[in-house]
Image (cartoon, rainbow over all chains, first blue to last red; front, side, top):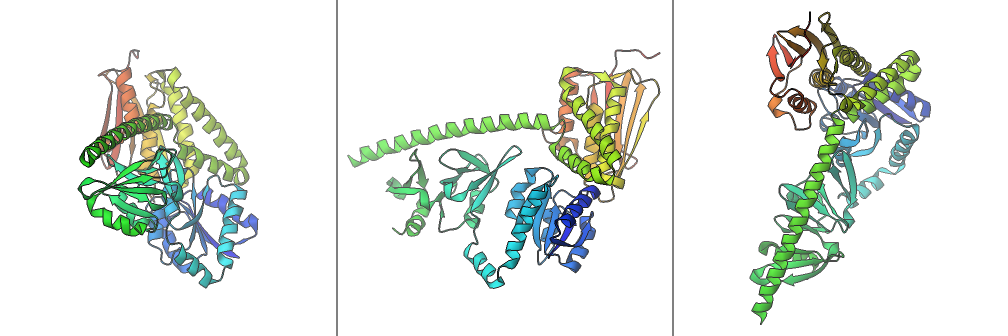
Length: 243
Length: 228
């Protein structure tokens, strides 16, 4: 049985989720709370397998609460509106549910948790070690969030204080700086070629040596996009491309 | 020969970058315009409020069916009223206050004991006119700062009175307060300020003050009607 804890600052939201969890017959309730600050002790004490966690709460947001918990339980975020899904995606959450939660979505989240629980621990560690880098990135347009497959991102570029992820179809604004992305993304795929550009090596078609020691990268996309390589990054790019 | 070729290639590249820059500027302008549209829609009824209310109703359907039904009625009244905002520049105060009470009761369903409120309205001023959603916007702002962001909750107080030819609306709370200058464009209060400026050029005021430990947002509106 999965031991679950529910935390939401709205009492009715807690009641409803507890009832739904009970009705699945798949969960043992480890507790619930409406005050995130008071919940911290209970969570440390009872160490649930999964925490159903609201995001906007007084005193501590769901994200801030997680930062204070070590070790962290598996988290399923529950949110009324998906403007926060962007960050939820990046924190170690297994799923997120939109309120009012639908029974089928709750069942899907429980399936995921059970799958994670059944694998032998060494296997899980191994998998985690093999996939330490994200495969997707989120982009927000107004209140809408696009999830982009990183394999389809040809490059990231900074322009006027915004960072864009370019795909063949169009460019999307992302909430990270180019430097931040360089740190987070798999260096086997993404290489910084300029102060404002991070290129996906899988999309590089040609590198032209250009005058002044700089170079020009031409991509495989339909537009044959060309990107400048800064002088001090040329060597690193060549190394990564194995040339 | 090589130099000429390199020169041409450089100019071609510069032209390409210039074109791309222009495309990006255009993209960015479109994005800003669509965000502005979104925020003006959302400034009336915030989706976060709407979905949380639907969640409360889902819970109440089994817990307390009569209250679930009453909450649906109040939500319907609030939605209908907010959708009609653009059809009427001014509404009688009593209509606005009825909606404010519906709104406060819905929020009370969500926040429980964390929300306490009081409505203090001078007698015989129900027919004075206010822009629709004006008081609701002030109350929503108070709930955000004093209730939703506070563990112990607080009290929201709505007062309305007629004073030297003006209708004075005050919404106060015992929360930590906020800085009017720091509000984002498209925020509820910012929209209200713009609406007031358009409806009563130079004659309506929106002020934020601290008084006896409370944050007070006051709006004064000139009135054409004369009270006897």
